[in-house]
Length: 484
Image 1: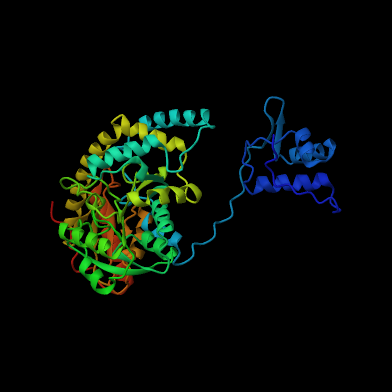
Image 2: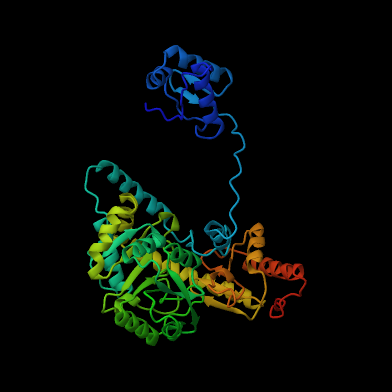
């Protein structure tokens, strides 16, 4: 058995080798490197691996056994004792302004959390069976060649699905499987190599996208959003020489309006004429609840300037960490090269199980059930919220509650975590602090099964409490619940 322990012996030290071995194993147990029940090498094997006498290791094991750190049996060998673990050292505090802090504020655990699908509509047992078969197949074919673009079966299924659901015709050769949206964004930025250039970013827009662009050393130019989506005219006026635009044309995140047909044409014409690229974040895909989903922007691209990003985070689960990128045909080979060397696809099992889930028709049936459930959740939530406030509107898979100016929406969101509620604050989505509008985004996928009015009551109590802390009054636009 290979030695899993961080044992470094100092043969010149005065401490006996058996004591050094004992201390190293005890430290590994105390620090959680070796968990209760973990099997240790036999003292014969460990002696051979460390190059010491057998009696030296046996003496160390005897002392560990006397201290009840380990137990030995003929059937089970030598294992770590099942004793209470010492309290783990507290994790390092989150750095203010860091991506980790931003992610914590945007995705706390609780009702109204955004970015995750409803669990009760997911056929979990079916997926588990399919995944188990895929894992067995993966382990039985370890010598096969793996395509760095991703499993061909999944790329074929995605291409067929995009043609039907998003109006986007592409070949499997244009598709690269990624580790979610962020994996696709990183891959695109590596291929395009636009460091130092300007990029249009929707304002408001997804904070992690903005941070990713900054880490990619691009200069972010905030472009306002209105009822027709991103204001292309503003971009043409203030940053016509930008090399890239990142947009959510299906339903703008977080405000919700789709990009109008006129602005789609303007955006594509700008990219074709200037040689700029467009990254289309198709974060909702076909999960657009009102009517038929707007077609993908890439379906209208005739100049090869749109890079389409999608994922299974909203439709199946973010824990899959599975997404895809559709490259313009002239760039397909470059995307394949970079994926091969720098951004490989996730493991085959998760890809093959997703491909089977799609090919057998389970995926499309799941989407239909999910949309029906989300429509019910949306209606229940908006009804409850509008009995309190007029400033409520649907925004994609969230309901947005606008708050009065200078309301500390981040602090309200943090306070609500203690009540099992996890709406996302709106203000961090803005690039420009001067334009930032406070508000709360309530995910409709995680609406409480029962007690929506009670949850909304806790929500508004927290808003009123924050108003008192700031020395103001309760927001004027919020009114008491209507009589029932």
